[in-house]
Image 1: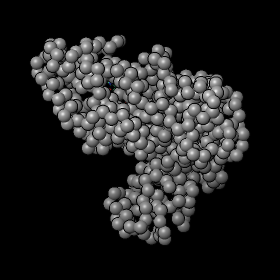
Image 2 (image 1 turned 45 degrees about the horizontal axis):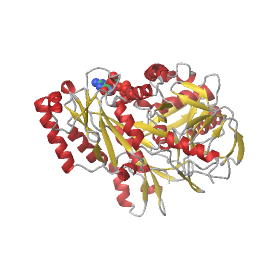
Image 3 (image 1 turned 90 degrees about the vertical axis):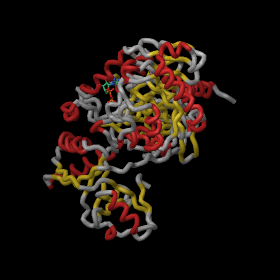
Image 4 (image 1 turned 120 degrees about the horizontal axis):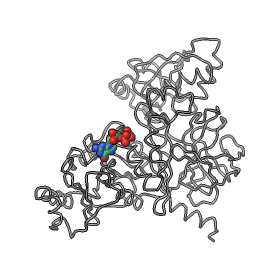
Length: 527
Ligand code: GDP
């Protein structure tokens, strides 16, 4: 029997799309996000997304570093409505504030939008984020940006997707010229032209045509570009991959769109297609099997913890992705790891800078919970039963420092600070074998500076960080693991849970160790 709640859940789930934009800094993510929000009529947010870069934490006291550098350390969640849909965009911070959080945010998304600068192609950070999405097997939609600038040929860009990322592509539209000669795009499915006017587009300007050979196409494109378009499209039809929805949903084929974010060109077409093709909130694995979003009991997991967004409080905010059921303010749920009931009294929803108290929320939505120190990354909340969602992955850090406390008398506060701050999940702790020295590992340099600053500001402890020359970590699984095998340009340590981890200075050291220990597994994420 379908209950009223079940019907409500079905409707709400069908409306929702939750995704992250993955890109390298400067590809135009802020600009694209701003345009997307504008379509939702979320005008009051549009400016603030941009302003965020400079003043996001103007009110946050411990984020002095961030203010000085004019960058944001934390990622946020934005929600808007468009054409009957409710859209949640998870922001993935870039620049120096790239951190493990950025990776982990992707675990809360059902799909990803990969934004690529047409001149620069696939860049380092995009590659890293892509690999995380690939592992999860989520659908990836590609937007090739800055077509108003001279860029690489569209064929080269698609080739790069395949060579560098190993993903096949299906161009949904195809550019006519680029840079100064950019005329617009040809929509392969709708057989129409979307015209580029060289300025910010307030609405889409389209011309229906009978096909690429249509005289109107020639008139608009000019002889040279028209001929090129016809040849390109023919080649795509003959040699390109066919569109295959199943492959799209498995993340094996990426639909590609060309456009220019800053001119608002191609953005709406992208959004419309994305909403049609992107998956609705997905079920998640747990100790009680797969949990469907329409399951009536509320459940969710914490994927990120952020300290002190409100300077008046020292508490933290835990970001929870709702997996199933309906969230209602004030409801009591089970904190499964802690084994106790808690009341969700002051949950917040995030709209760029503005935070609103949320009364109801549904699967796919992200809510922020006040955290007086009770949550950890990966914690599950459940209305009924001890459901525990799959553990979130731990990613290999790339920068390492040995940490010591300057004043030995403060050892207790030091330990408390390290324990609490590393629980937020942007810094990993390792212990050396024998000497019990503490080594910290991060994905982005800024995390070290933030930790140093917060240890002083929140725990009154001066720490000393001594950079080590290791570049990556591998979790080591096997029998008879011996520290002696990791002496040259490497070191064996343990993580917080007691797993063996080997740190390596370079690829060569890693490969040598792998050759020497053929029976041992070298994992990039914690087992
Ligand atoms: P983010 O670092 O990825 O968030 O990138 P931004 O949105 O801040 O954009 C980086 C730079 O690229 C800014 O100077 C933007 O004005 C510019 N930009 C963004 N989209 C486009 C575009 O479609 N065409 C051109 N020419 N520039 C763009």
